[in-house]
Image (cartoon, rainbow, N blue to C red; front, top):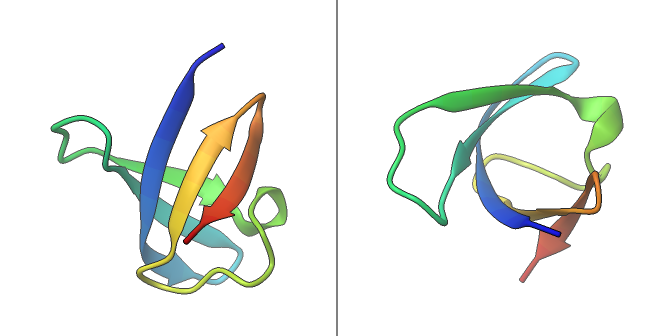
Length: 57
């Protein structure tokens, strides 16, 4: 089981651009907001584990 950490860089309509924070990477991942916690906003930190995204304090 792998765990990855992301930061919400931007939100564009029904999609959010996520940037990995647990490794050095400039790549952004485009994810449908329906797959993300409803309370996300730009700057939110997320954990991806077991094919689900969770808010991280």
